[in-house]
Image 1 (tube, rainbow, N blue to C red):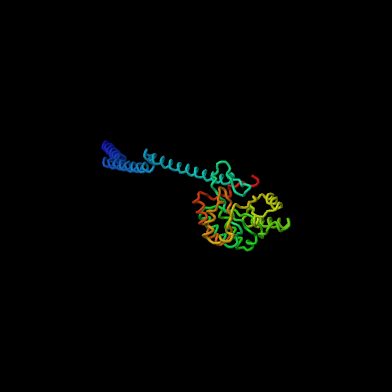
Image 2 (image 1 turned 90 degrees about the horizontal axis):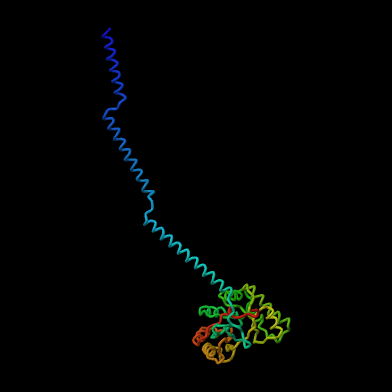
Length: 308
């Protein structure tokens, strides 16, 4: 019986040692576990470092670069704003251009206030007969303003209407020279009205603008025509001198010389020319000769209208 008890005690001790051996890891196991933990920690630190690199805060140098970039963008924006303001200002000036010259009783022009006096007005009559478009192109190249006085009889085809449209789009005013180039003193008041108003209507249809200037054929005006022109808001004008319709000046050299050397070339002179081949050929020499004499071509937009 005593032996049995001793055996039971021994068995119990063996069982307890076995259980204890299973529940507690060995030293080797503990070391392996510790190493695994360290490796995991190193791996997590590496991942944290990668995240830190991606979300790294800006350095002072980066901030400086951004500030400079922002400054350049702001300066660029300011320059654009200034440029837009200047463009708008230019448009306003063009729209609200004040008259700088008045027409005298002798059909020349005198300056208002401090406008330059050494100017002349170029005018081309009888357009678009044959050479008006070429003359306009020459004047455009020379930056020389002029008024083209047209006749309805030369605008009856679509081709001629397009020529006047092109001349107008170049910036040259289109003036009324009557429909049929008729001497107004030889026809009735009703016919005078038709000669003037029918052409104004045609000019407006072609260019989109009513004519602002009127010149009677041969320079012959009637009291009725003067009043009608005034009622229509057009400035009636004749000329100071012209030579291309007279004998001896129907060729390039002679015409170019007389237009510049004549005693009638004075400040504000109103120069008459026509849609003629010799005038077309002489036009560049005339403009350059006038400039050599100290004159500039008067912009019609600066002439005071009848209602101003």
